[in-house]
Length: 114
Image 1: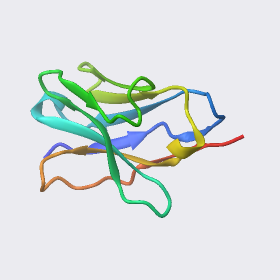
Image 2: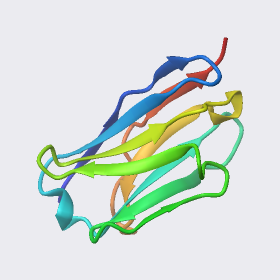
Image 3: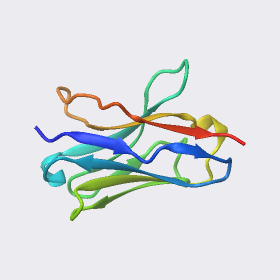
Image 4: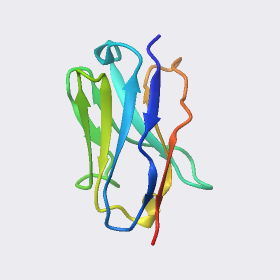
């Protein structure tokens, strides 16, 4: 099974930008759909957006217009590009194969604060 590992989190000021990476251990096109999730303190995990192997991308209303998802086939990596960040974007961000049996990774922390 192809494994996914998140990276790229950090501390950023409100209004700033950050790019998260989701590196696959094998061919990223072997995964039908890769989703980006986030979980803020005290809140349930929510789906931020996803990209299908064919290239279709969907983003939640809460991030549409601020976040984008892209893919680098050579690097076998999916990116979550975040801009106009707000304090309520603070969360642990995860990428995941949306197959039910696929495991969760450890995530990467994003903190938006002055």
